[in-house]
Amino acid sequence: MTLSPKFPVTADDFDLIQNIIDDSPAKDDGLLSGRLGLAFYYYNAFKITRAENWWRATVACLREILDRLEEGNSTLTNPSFSSGLAGLGYVFEYIKREGLPAEIELADLPPTFDDFLVEGALEMMKSNNVDFLHGAVGILHYYASLPASDLTERILEYLIQQLIKDGVESWKGTWWRNSVLKEGLNCMNMSLAHGQCGILLVLLNVLEKHGDKWNVSDTIRKGISFLLSSAGHVQAEKASIFPFFTMENSGETFVGNRLAWCYGDMNVAWLLYRAGTRFGVREWIEVAEHVGLATITRRTHEETLIADAHYCHGAAGVTHMYRALHRITGKEDYKEAFDFWAIRTLTMAREDAKASRYAGHEGSLLTGWPGIGLILMSVNLGVWTPWGEAFLLC
Picture 1 (tube, rainbow, N blue to C red):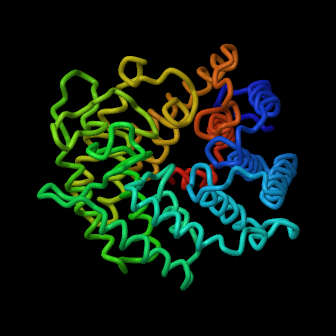
Picture 2: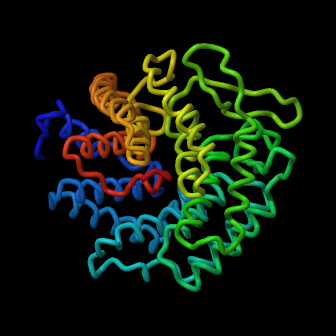
């Protein structure tokens, strides 16, 4: 691989990451922790580097996934984005933009694919599972990513109407119960991975691609109103401004110092920058700026809870978040933070390898080596494919 003189990664670093991934059997067939995630990793590595070995690895991985489906050995038995068929559809559509080999076609997917996903999403909503990673909103995310068609729009309308209906209305705005959360249905969760920010970012994607056909803008406004009402008073220097969650009955809030892709103030800043820009609401952008810029001085473990390099709540995800914040604002403060965390990702990755971290999930896109590898490749070559869209970034 070509190495950048501006970023101190080495060929040995990339070889070590790939050797770990190659020596670790896939946990399942899913996107976040299995073979789909590896196919997604290999394909984006090909797009970033243009090295043919990555394309060959992509094709081999996709063939294995389809063979396992045909033989009845696949773990893709649920409709979710993280570990099921919505993730499969997403990866195939993503790769189709560049062109699949003739022997791998979307027609190879089950003929009842859409029926299974829509019915699954509705069943999830009935049980209050509106999770982005593991529930109905992840399935909605898949359909929002598809090219416009009559079928896609009918499905989007159906799912969005149900999601809006399931929202909990109050004088503060709208929020959603999520049965996936261990805290229970009374937990008003604000995160990207499992709560308010993730739901509203998916609805923003629908609005930007399809227009305001299903009263999406009103729901987004109410959802942001509720989110803004949750902001607390900072109890300590360099602490989060927004809570991870608030309990509906007691009003008890949990505010942590985590700086991450999955949870925390960076989620709020990213959502409010995007929504403020889309709706032309200066107040939202001002809050985004206050919250986002307050994160950049938080760099120690105590201030961020970042202990390693992985994507979900490690240095790689924070690197990607700061790139998104810099892209949408052009602010050099975010570029400097991006540069800092890119180096920290590399340093931590080397430490992780020595400590044999991620045992049992080395091949996980979200909590293992592939997410780290994509960040390091992208930073090294300055080539950023749109793989962050899978995780609601740009």
